[in-house]
Amino acid sequence: MSDKATLEVNGNKHDFPIIVGTENEVAIDIKSLRGVTGGVTTIDAGYKNTGSCESEITFLDGEKGILRYRGYSIEELAEKADFLEVAYLLIFGELPTKEQHDKFHADIKSKSIVDDDVRKIIDAFPKSAHPMGVLSSLTSALTAFNPSSVNVDSEADMYNSVVKILGKFPVLVAWTMRKKQGLPLDYGSNSLGYVENVLKMMFKQPNEDYVQNKIIVDALDKLLILHADHEQNCSTSTVRIVGSSHAGLFASLSAGISALWGPLHGGANQAVLEMLEAIREDGGDTKKYMAKAKDKNDPFRLMGFGHRVYKNFDPRARIIKKAADEVLADLGVDDPILEIAKGLEQEALNDDYFVKRKLYPNVDFYSGIIYRAMGIPTDMFTVMFALGRLPGWIAQWREMRLRKEPIGRPRQLYVGETLRPFKKIEKR
Ligand code: ACO
Image 1: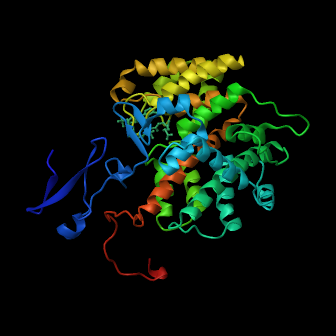
Image 2 (image 1 turned 120 degrees about the vertical axis):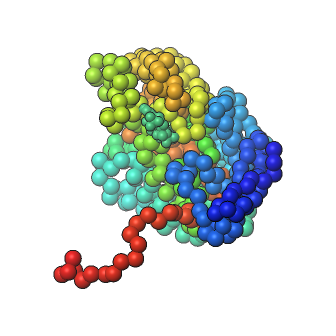
Image 3 (image 1 turned 45 degrees about the vertical axis):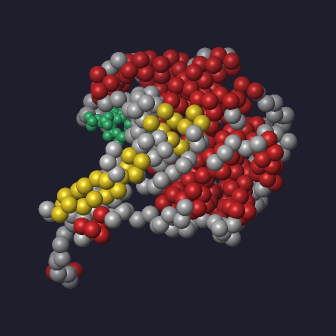
């Protein structure tokens, strides 16, 4: 492999260094492009070919269907680790020792109280508000209750802000759901594991003890791990770019939550379930919906299918599909929607349109079926995704700040009007 790439512009040749990552990915470093060419820029709508940073956090190979956090395979982590271990791994780079894990959890718990005035903000939302809008607003509101900015040169300051948000975020998640259901806003219990506490905060009824169900705890733990990071996706890039202006961690996360909300990204898990439900209500005719998905005059897309990076099975989808089978069987839930999903998948995998375009089920195709079996309302699915993605966003924000990355500011190619004289309003 040559160590430089040559580009000819207007008859002049320019060399650009080629850099190679630890997994032998190759990138052309065009930092000097505008300088040496006198202002020529690149256009890459949707950043399909553009690397925005160098990162040590997550490796994925979309052709081979590989996903690794800090070098550990997603399959091994989903099977053997717990969510907090994975959060620590993503954020700090190594799996924690038992002492580090216990201290991390204790520190998170010690910061989990949310200012009581936050309840007033929640009260001001109409019950009809979408939970993702509420969660994004509440995360942003945390900046008002925690106004001091993080000194990124101080390890203690960084650590403090990390454990603070990991402690408070599950409370906001639970309160977002409970407000909508008219249930009292409460805290869980510091004697519980992180995921157990999330479940208790979400589901505890005021007049009953909450009994943990190990099947549900394990399933949620796995789902959160599978969602914990996915390198430079839309929401993560948003977190990094907002943070690159030196906006605070909570403000950057709030922007990431908004980016995640869209149905082409994290909002797909809600959209998948609504689609499967609509197919069921329409008599379960999967062929009809396959035809709609392929019809270029129909805006319908098969939600939960396709991915910008994976041109092979999304490895997370494989794990989640297996988990969906197991969890539903263990819980004794017989959900006809699972059969519809499997039917759609089979048809898509054998259909020329999907095969040619390398469209496979993504992480969102089966996750909603598990959330539903756990009793989580459909409009909370993307909130659960955000809870899982939180460590990834934090890790990426922290990495961006520690590497002292410059402010994110893309270029454009202007294609609008050239200079023209102003006409007074009565002359237009
Ligand atoms: N159903 C039907 N056709 C599809 C689908 C789909 N789900 N996804 C892509 N295609 C088609 C496109 O129409 C296009 O066809 P064409 O080449 O004939 O024009 C081709 O496949 C390529 O699709 P693009 O939209 O160009 O691919 P892109 O990489 O920009 O988009 C995306 C990826 C947004 C995920 C897309 O596949 C999609 O909309 N999927 C459904 C939504 C979804 O499940 N999103 C969750 C992604 S995972 C996540 O973010 C957590």
